[in-house]
Image 1 (cartoon, one colour):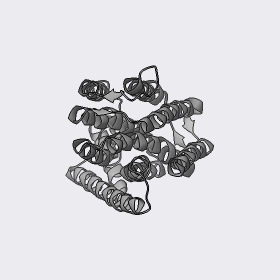
Image 2 (spheres, one colour; image 1 turned 90 degrees about the horizontal axis):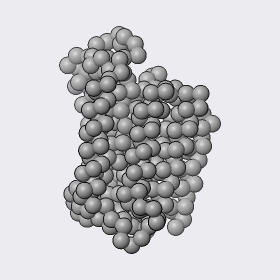
Image 3 (cartoon, helix red, strand yellow; image 1 turned 45 degrees about the vertical axis):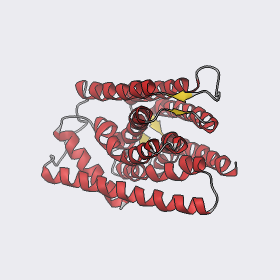
Length: 298
């Protein structure tokens, strides 16, 4: 379900991008990223409504680390990813600033304290930043990199939504049953959130980015991941904060700190020769494997 859904999604998204006279990167950062972030929306908002703050925040933070580690790294191992100056200066820099801002909103300058909280105002601020970013992308839209051989028609939109439904449903089934197995093994909610749930809700991004890279659609491959991280931090986390303000647990501090470092490292890789190489991909995957080991060991 994940693989076939991603196959349809990438092909139809490229056709739609050229129909709208925008680049693959723009469509990856917005429409595709929003679609593949649907599982994070579902899991995080559901957890926020039921008061499970460890799951709601842990899923977003864990998914973003997973996106940059396993997915971006794994995709680069399969096929090196071509980046661009615009991706670095506009989208990557905005992701780095956003991640650092959320770290500051959560913990201030003094690290974690028992009184740290995520308020409705902070949630609303994040959501407004997302609205402003998307508006900016479409106002200052990039033209297509090439003339696509097939212009979008009604079938393109049908395949886009069909692909989206397949990957969201596939990700849901993966999360549901992997979490059941983890609970049976005695793993805590926080560890399940930042590992298994994060991996499962990121499965659409994984399938989509690998499929896009294999088809040579680097703009969709990397734009999907940067865009998904932004949707998660600003949209998903913002709505979660508006719905149910919550205290920030101590476990979140280390994961947020790692996320800031991962975004910074990814920025360096994007800038180096405007390409993410196989060796750099191996480094990103290795960092994530080490993190998972310590999460489960603890």
